[in-house]
Image (cartoon, rainbow, N blue to C red; front, side, top):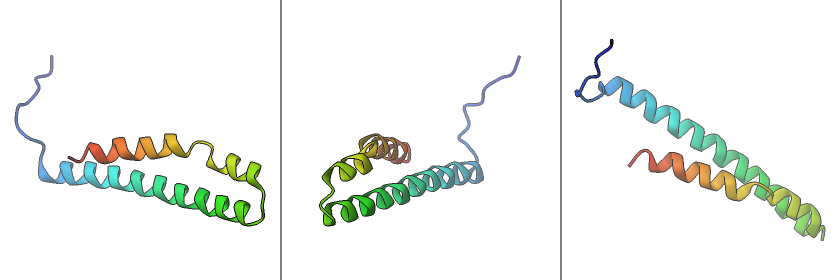
Length: 73
């Protein structure tokens, strides 16, 4: 049986976890920016249905990024 430790995580582990979370949030942010650029182009050409398609999933991505960033509080 393994025992759990009440000691805080070592600083290098915390830094690694933080870097991983920030990296994932950055990936999501890049994806959101790309989607919004697509929306901008679609709206500029008057193609509102394509803009709607490009927006699909943005709320989920924003929620995921928000949840990740809340882990760092």
